[in-house]
Image (cartoon, rainbow, N blue to C red; front, side, top):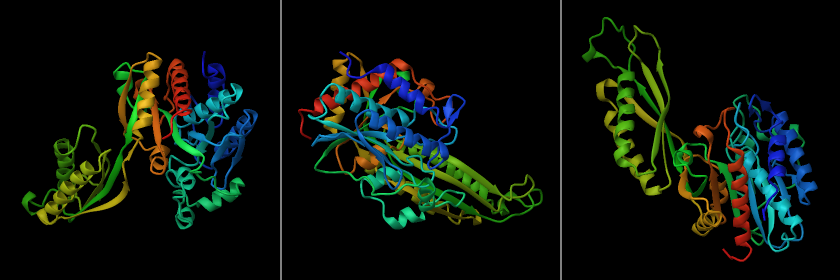
Amino acid sequence: MSRINAGRLMADLRALARFGACGTGVDRVSFSAPDIEARQWLVERMQSAGLQARIDRVGNVAGVTPGASRAVVIGSHTDTVPRGGWLDGAMGVIYGLEIARSRIEQGRAATLGVDVASFQDEEGTYLSCLGSRAFCADLPESELAAARTPGGETVPQAIERAGYGGAVWLRDPARHVAYLEAHIEQGPRLEAAALRLGAVTGIVGIRRFRVICKGQADHAGTTPINLRRDAARSLIGLAHWVHEAIAGLGGPDTVWNVGVMSVLPGAANVVPAEASMVVEFRDTELAVLDRVEAAFRAQIAAADGRGGVVVSAQPIARSTPTLMDPRLVAMIDGVAGALSVPSMRMVSGAGHDAMIVGRVMPAAMLFIPSIGGRSHDIVENTDEADIVLGCEALAGVVERLETVAL
């Protein structure tokens, strides 16, 4: 017997995708008109499913199962990046809705309820993971007030424009036994391995730096090479070090990137006076991140002053790795086995609300494949059979939690 209604699940996913529809994807950034409309629609769907639903002060949508003294929180986010995909985040929220609704229909909600969350601004239009941080009481009012878009609108201004009020929905330690989040993988590993389910063991920490090299502008035709203070030459050398050295310094799951580079004044016949880049590296092990950072800082120090170029590195982002609860990870594996579906354990190289919630309560994530590994783009998609399978599997984890105390 199916634990969920597959047709209803897919109908809700497609209905949600109409808010901010953009070709085959969705453009539904936080506090935009489509985002506000989608949250109200979600409240109405939750209420019709038998949940007590509301939008809190920061825009979180909370659907609470009535009559349950213990509950699992299932959720994700319904905001998107500009011209994003229709499943990123939204799928995890609709999984929660369908599992909660099915359990109410089957008379299982009193044993263990499902509280459904659509957290605000996971994508960071104003402040990354704003909603899940508020839910975990990890968002000072001063930081909330200071967060703003590149266009200058603050979160309080957006809240007023949206008409949100009331209290922030907070984690209830006496009620909430675990947090579960399902997501498309957003990468190619499951598809490459021909697997349909992934049990996430941890979400990476991130170290991100802006490297700035300052030299001197001179005529590129008349200044000898050995007398130049070439900022770009220094930067390129450091970029080469990043790509060559971190491979030996990191672990099996370490990834790194040089994603932004600029050269000033940017003329073919002028020796660059200034050059900059943004470097980041990610891993689930704190010791690995510390080791890579120490070597990176040593390389910056060694490059500073060489060739008359001043080199500095400014930290611009830093997050701590979050390990998923091993008992929940084992449950995902167990449910996959019971469904006769091979799975794999894997780390998440992208940030999710689970990395915030997992710091204060047991949490786990389930991945399903992304076609072509694509995400954060309107081409993002996943086979419908995999979407349904993922929801069945997550419902199976909830069933196991009925009799297990974490």
